[in-house]
Image 1 (tube, rainbow, N blue to C red):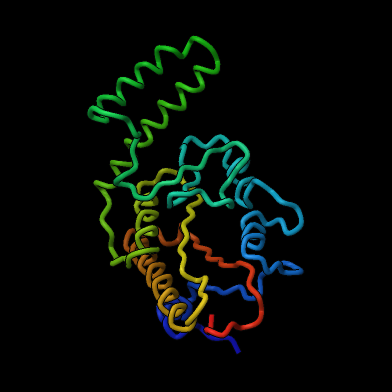
Image 2: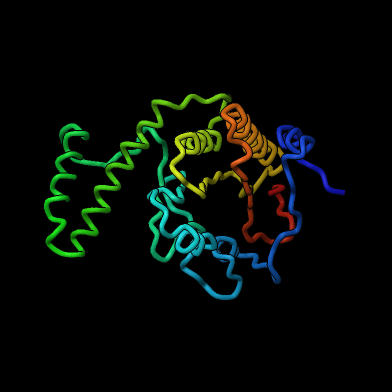
Length: 247
C-alpha cells in the first residue's frame, strides 16, 4: 500500500483534482548508494559514463536553437545545477527578478548601460569576434531591462511560503512576463536527514507541497496553468540500514 506523507494535504487536493501524477519506483540498475555519484547520475542520466553535460543540456542546445530569447532556459538560484549544463548555450542563474541587473561599478546603471551599448556598436565592424561579443553584450543589457520591467507589472494571486515558494514566485513572474522561456529549474534542500527523519520530512514536504499549490493557484488566476507542467524529482545514494537516530 502506498500513501502520501500526512502533512502534504496540498498534494492530495491536486491529486483528487486529477492534476497530479506519481511515478513510483523510477530509477536505474543497480543503484549507486554514494551520495555524490548517485546525484551525478540523476543530473546527467548517465549511470555508467561520467558526463559534464546535464540531461537537459541537449534539449537546451539543439531543440531550442535559434530562439530569440537569451532566457530559453533559466535556473533560479545562485549555482547552476549539472542537469542544466549544455555544450554551448549559456543558462542564466538568477535569485530574484528585482535584483537581476547588469552589474556595474559606480554610477547609475541605466546611464552606464547606454554607454556600453554605444561602445559595443562602435566596434562591431572591427572583427567577427568583436561583432559577436558586442551583439551578445547588447542583447544581455536589453534583456535585463525587460526582466526588471516584469517586477513592476507582476502581482501574485497566491500566498507563497518562504523557501521554495519564493523561487516558484520568481518563476511565476517570468512566466507572466512571457520571455519565451521553456525550462525553469529550482531546488530545495532539507531531505538529507541524519536524525529525526519523521518530523523533519513532514515539515519539508509541507513546504514543498504548499509552495507548488500556491504556484498553480497563481498561474490559474492568470490563465496560465495549462501552459506549465511541473516535474519533481529527488534522489541520492543512501545505505539501506536504518541508523540509531532514526535518520
